[in-house]
Amino acid sequence: MSIYHQSKKAVVNTLIHLFLLAVAVTCIYPLLWMVASSFKTQGTIFSDISLIPRQFHFENYYLALTKGDFGRYFLNSVFYTVSAVLGIVFISSLAAYAFSRLRFPGRNIIFAVFIAAMMIPIPGSFVSLFVLLNKLHLRNTSLGYILCMINVGLATSIFLLKTFFDKMPRELEDAARIDGCSKLGIWWNVALPLSRPVLAVVVIFNALNVWNEYVLALIIFDSKHLMPLQRALMLFRGEFLTNYPLLMAGLTITALPIIVLYLFMQRYIVKGVASAGVFG
Image (tube, rainbow, N blue to C red; front, side):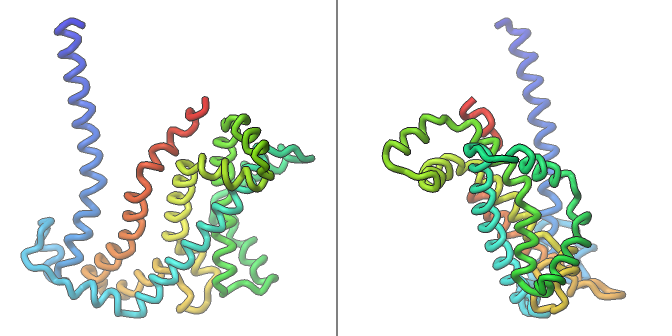
């Protein structure tokens, strides 16, 4: 390769990295400003625009956690997120494996219905969910909300997992059958371990969806003590005055679990994004 082409490639790579760095800064800066603002006071949050406060006010976090049963809301969100994600992983992995490997009447039609459901925006199903939960006497209950969130995440999760299972070598299943595995045994011992990268994508996607849900919770719940964490953030917004330091502390507490989950599963997510070519 000539010196000209080497120089051209170096310049192009430098420009690409500068562009990506600029995008990263624009994405990370609001998060850093949020964390920095959570340590400031109501009087300095807008006058002191630095990312390192002159004085750290850790009491904002204590007040955020103790004001208005914020801890109860936090535990509610943890419970709803864990329950819904476990339900989605269990049901979608079984359904995706059945769609991929089993032959039964109407298989393609049923799968097409699931795919069509992906085109319906979540608010478009609020009325039907409200009516259904009322008839089943599940409105204003934790079970009703969890079942709704499982329903919301199934279509996309089944699609992702079926795409992976379709490319899984059948020789692996044949070897498992020789060892005496049933269909459920193959799903548990072969399909699920191999699909961990895709499962990581499913977990992160649905955890974000459940953790950040607010409107559906307002529709389903009447009791405030059943509300998820996003409802608690409204406590820091008054009719005429918003307590921004407490709001930023609450937002930081809200964002932290998802950030930790993403960092913990990052390597699986990268593999999951590229999983379409794993067995190709």
